[in-house]
Image (cartoon, rainbow, N blue to C red; front, side, top):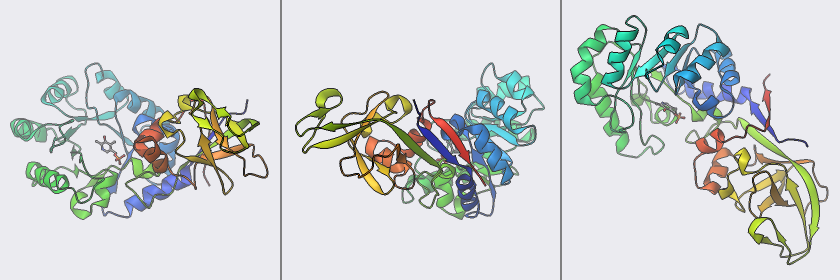
Length: 345
Ligand SMILES: *Cc1c(COP(=O)(O)O)cnc(C)c1O
């Protein structure tokens, strides 16, 4: 059986990194957690290195260790999750830089690896990771003595430029870090677009690199083509798929595609998006099954061998809206069964 093909355009990825980099005067890193937002951290990171990226961020030490093997000894690999119990050897052997996010982690790190580089995460209101102002005050002197590579915090509402949380977090971050002689980072993709005040010394874009909102000018990076397994005639009044969720309102031609919710085509999109055969729109009909999807091809003169679900006609964010979620979840749900093709010049 022909499998669905996920094409990842590494030139588009590099364009997006360059476009985000051009928005600031400061260093632009790249976030490649969750296997490069589902698109393959190793390939993504190696492509970004060729474009000049030298600093990467991942969520967990395991991701960092695997990335280290793919990209070699030189680039800096930062770990958002910090220094967790049991990670010491990996952090040391693979030369990972944990972003320490609690007093416990700071103690663990300086006791286990006193000479090993680290950064610090501060909480400026998101209440997810990082030291609060009072904790920071208590350990600041000790931490600064040991020369952290970076002090960072994360914005909760950066995808909404007018949200009052943005200036509030900015003020809190400045309050905690102004005057310290350490590089600072506050902005992910959304923060870059908020303007200079948010840029500090280093930005950490993720989703914008991969073609997702809030970077509206992003070039699409992922495209997904699904093969047609079978085509059938369905008479007016007949149904298609589980629960008889779609009933033909006219004599129809229905194609069955070889992919489903087990491949990350979220079932909540059922009936809400289309596929494309060239420029022709073929709506999804009935419920998305685990491995199969029905589309209406009645109006096509030729039945294609495959159709496009994601690409120039339909973005990750269009799919996300249809499923009631965000582009990040569409990307990181991309199926392991897809044949992956990397395109680059
Ligand atoms: C995921 C993440 C990023 C990247 O965010 P995007 O919105 O994808 O650009 C940056 N910083 C932290 C702390 C993150 O968790």
